[in-house]
Image (cartoon, rainbow over all chains, first blue to last red; front, side, top):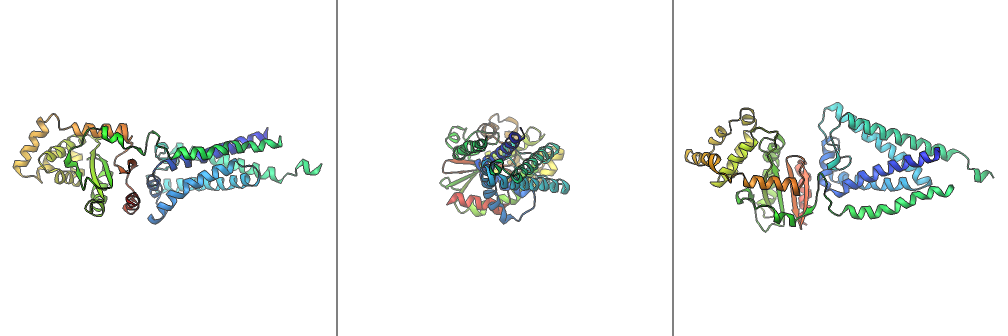
Length: 148
Length: 221
């Protein structure tokens, strides 16, 4: 049962990253650059590389999360790190009173940083953490086939 | 049971297919890349809203609302650079589109004044005046007063007559709103549409000009 929960959790995280990347890749990179710029975290010269590369990184990560073993396990770590970073920049924007469009799932499905945004991202981070801990816990346990 | 882990490979196989379809235009709330042929079906836009060469390889269409502060920023800060870098050099044709938002009380009136001025060849000067003085007339609704400051008394009389009596003055606005709603799926103003090689890239908001310039230059290649 726990094994299936772990699989389901990893699948959900993978779908989230694939969807987020897919929606952004569909749009002109300039649209996501506007979202990145609204966070006021990077110089203007970084906007194009970030807007072009990050959506593809999300897609690659989504695919990697679907793979078994070592790759899937370490991808869950990277995904959790990325989700933590997204939550951090959301908190930072909120504290600074910035009006941002998160651009998380493309321009049509994005919104301001509000309570709903925080709830979503905390839930995603919690799921990512649970999956990551579960994956590494599972990997530490000795395999029955080797003991037999 | 151990082989179940390889079930993950099955969805992974579908991902490349999804990515290929990602490059295909699809309607969404904030659709991009709508086919350019739809442009041809939209109502014609009056010439006074266009500038630059009609043979330019790229066309930039800008949806604005005269009462929207972000549109004012775009008009006052980015538009002069767009004009000097791209329009004056024949690389881009610029087209203004009106998208008065319902929550803005005086926006429609301001649009009527701008388009009436366009009928007598004074569109640019009045549009500029409306954006420059936006905080003033948006607060008190006295659009007529700010427009009168940049036109001669005779011109102003003509504009007032058109604003009052011309029943077709809003036709281009209706066409622009229909275009923005049905084709470009606007969710905000300003929205910039970069039209190149039959593709409409719809950009909500205005990025830093340096980034926008990179984007347009890539379209010009």
